[in-house]
Length: 143
Image (cartoon, rainbow, N blue to C red; front, side, top):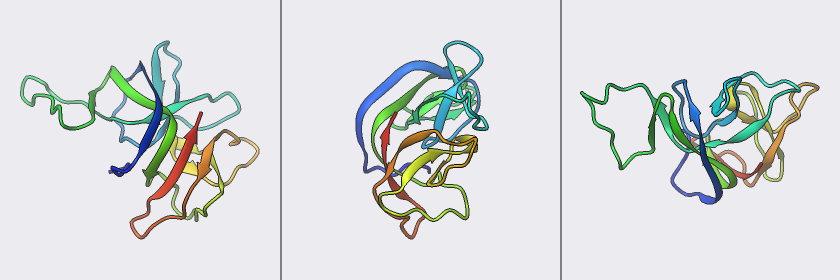
Protein backbone atom coordinates (compact mmCIF):
# COMPACT_ATOMS: atom_id res chain seq x y z
CA UNK A 1 0.00 0.00 0.00
CA UNK A 2 1.33 3.43 -0.89
CA UNK A 3 -1.17 5.62 0.96
CA UNK A 4 -2.46 5.22 4.49
CA UNK A 5 -6.05 6.00 5.35
CA UNK A 6 -5.56 9.26 7.23
CA UNK A 7 -5.67 11.97 4.59
CA UNK A 8 -7.24 15.33 3.84
CA UNK A 9 -8.18 15.76 0.19
CA UNK A 10 -8.89 19.40 -0.60
CA UNK A 11 -9.12 19.29 -4.40
CA UNK A 12 -9.28 16.46 -6.94
CA UNK A 13 -9.19 16.04 -10.69
CA UNK A 14 -10.97 13.12 -12.40
CA UNK A 15 -10.72 13.77 -16.12
CA UNK A 16 -7.55 11.86 -16.93
CA UNK A 17 -7.00 8.21 -17.86
CA UNK A 18 -3.98 6.03 -17.19
CA UNK A 19 -2.81 3.22 -19.45
CA UNK A 20 -0.20 1.51 -17.25
CA UNK A 21 -0.48 -0.58 -14.08
CA UNK A 22 0.39 1.50 -11.03
CA UNK A 23 0.07 1.85 -7.27
CA UNK A 24 -1.65 4.79 -5.57
CA UNK A 25 0.44 7.43 -3.83
CA UNK A 26 2.71 8.39 -6.72
CA UNK A 27 2.76 11.68 -8.62
CA UNK A 28 1.68 11.28 -12.23
CA UNK A 29 2.63 13.53 -15.14
CA UNK A 30 1.10 14.51 -18.48
CA UNK A 31 1.46 11.82 -21.13
CA UNK A 32 2.11 12.29 -24.85
CA UNK A 33 -1.44 11.06 -25.54
CA UNK A 34 -4.04 13.73 -24.83
CA UNK A 35 -6.24 12.98 -21.83
CA UNK A 36 -3.81 10.46 -20.32
CA UNK A 37 -1.35 10.62 -17.42
CA UNK A 38 1.78 8.52 -16.97
CA UNK A 39 4.83 7.84 -14.82
CA UNK A 40 8.11 8.98 -16.31
CA UNK A 41 11.62 10.16 -15.61
CA UNK A 42 11.66 13.81 -14.60
CA UNK A 43 13.21 16.44 -16.84
CA UNK A 44 12.73 20.16 -17.50
CA UNK A 45 9.65 19.47 -19.68
CA UNK A 46 7.79 17.37 -17.09
CA UNK A 47 4.46 18.66 -15.74
CA UNK A 48 3.13 17.15 -12.51
CA UNK A 49 -0.64 16.59 -12.77
CA UNK A 50 -1.63 15.04 -9.44
CA UNK A 51 -1.19 12.35 -6.79
CA UNK A 52 -2.77 9.05 -7.85
CA UNK A 53 -5.57 8.01 -5.47
CA UNK A 54 -6.42 4.70 -7.20
CA UNK A 55 -4.56 1.47 -7.83
CA UNK A 56 -4.53 0.87 -11.58
CA UNK A 57 -4.91 -2.80 -12.50
CA UNK A 58 -5.38 -4.87 -15.62
CA UNK A 59 -8.14 -7.33 -14.70
CA UNK A 60 -10.50 -9.48 -16.69
CA UNK A 61 -13.74 -7.97 -15.45
CA UNK A 62 -15.74 -10.95 -16.75
CA UNK A 63 -13.90 -13.18 -14.28
CA UNK A 64 -13.24 -10.72 -11.44
CA UNK A 65 -15.87 -8.03 -10.95
CA UNK A 66 -14.76 -4.60 -9.81
CA UNK A 67 -14.63 -4.18 -6.03
CA UNK A 68 -16.45 -0.93 -5.26
CA UNK A 69 -14.99 -0.84 -1.72
CA UNK A 70 -11.43 -0.38 -2.99
CA UNK A 71 -9.87 2.44 -4.94
CA UNK A 72 -9.30 0.47 -8.14
CA UNK A 73 -9.25 1.66 -11.73
CA UNK A 74 -8.96 -0.43 -14.86
CA UNK A 75 -6.04 0.23 -17.25
CA UNK A 76 -7.11 3.01 -19.67
CA UNK A 77 -9.88 3.95 -17.26
CA UNK A 78 -10.42 7.28 -15.54
CA UNK A 79 -8.36 7.72 -12.35
CA UNK A 80 -8.78 10.01 -9.34
CA UNK A 81 -5.99 12.52 -8.84
CA UNK A 82 -5.46 14.83 -5.87
CA UNK A 83 -3.98 18.22 -6.59
CA UNK A 84 -4.15 19.56 -3.06
CA UNK A 85 -4.29 17.90 0.36
CA UNK A 86 -2.38 16.03 3.06
CA UNK A 87 -1.35 12.41 2.60
CA UNK A 88 0.66 9.69 4.35
CA UNK A 89 2.75 8.14 1.57
CA UNK A 90 5.64 5.69 1.35
CA UNK A 91 6.59 6.65 -2.22
CA UNK A 92 10.00 7.93 -1.11
CA UNK A 93 13.18 6.82 -2.91
CA UNK A 94 15.41 4.48 -0.91
CA UNK A 95 18.28 6.19 0.86
CA UNK A 96 16.38 9.48 1.29
CA UNK A 97 15.75 10.75 4.82
CA UNK A 98 12.72 13.04 5.10
CA UNK A 99 12.51 15.75 7.76
CA UNK A 100 9.57 17.91 8.75
CA UNK A 101 9.50 21.18 6.80
CA UNK A 102 11.54 19.89 3.84
CA UNK A 103 10.37 20.89 0.36
CA UNK A 104 8.94 17.93 -1.60
CA UNK A 105 10.27 17.40 -5.13
CA UNK A 106 9.07 15.06 -7.86
CA UNK A 107 11.52 12.23 -8.56
CA UNK A 108 11.70 9.62 -11.32
CA UNK A 109 8.89 7.05 -11.45
CA UNK A 110 6.50 9.33 -9.54
CA UNK A 111 8.29 9.10 -6.21
CA UNK A 112 8.69 12.13 -3.93
CA UNK A 113 11.97 13.31 -2.42
CA UNK A 114 13.32 16.22 -0.38
CA UNK A 115 16.23 17.09 -2.65
CA UNK A 116 16.47 18.77 -6.03
CA UNK A 117 19.16 18.74 -8.67
CA UNK A 118 19.61 20.50 -12.01
CA UNK A 119 17.00 18.40 -13.82
CA UNK A 120 14.61 17.58 -10.98
CA UNK A 121 13.26 20.86 -9.63
CA UNK A 122 9.50 20.30 -9.71
CA UNK A 123 8.09 21.25 -6.29
CA UNK A 124 4.97 19.29 -5.33
CA UNK A 125 4.55 20.47 -1.73
CA UNK A 126 6.22 20.21 1.68
CA UNK A 127 6.87 17.39 4.12
CA UNK A 128 4.85 17.73 7.34
CA UNK A 129 6.63 14.92 9.19
CA UNK A 130 9.66 12.67 9.13
CA UNK A 131 9.31 9.03 8.05
CA UNK A 132 7.69 6.75 10.61
CA UNK A 133 8.81 3.20 11.40
CA UNK A 134 6.82 1.86 8.41
CA UNK A 135 8.49 4.25 5.95
CA UNK A 136 5.52 6.65 5.62
CA UNK A 137 5.75 10.44 5.85
CA UNK A 138 3.02 13.10 5.74
CA UNK A 139 3.04 15.19 2.59
CA UNK A 140 1.27 18.53 2.18
CA UNK A 141 0.55 18.37 -1.56
CA UNK A 142 -0.03 21.58 -3.49
CA UNK A 143 0.16 21.42 -7.29
